[in-house]
Length: 88
Picture 1 (cartoon, rainbow, N blue to C red):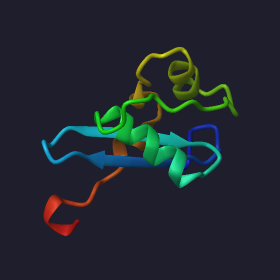
Picture 2 (cartoon, rainbow, N blue to C red):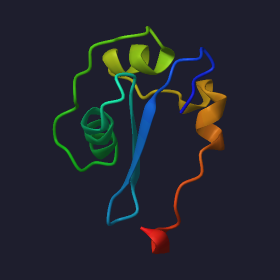
Picture 3 (cartoon, rainbow, N blue to C red):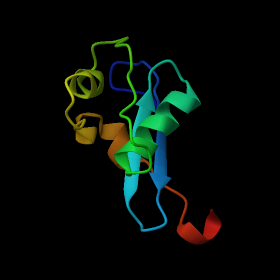
């Protein structure tokens, strides 16, 4: 996803069997980093992944502080369209 700053982020979504959704991101474009974050957010991982801040982006700042990122700070996130369940 292209951020408002022009940087790119890899964004992941995980949907648990119970329907709980989790999101993750990586400014290093590391799929494992984003997936692990999304798995934790969906309740599928016990330990919250640690990340090293790269851009001082609000998502990173929130994550490092132990808070949930405000996904809406990036207009592009709201514009993402996820595959329907039957297509997965």
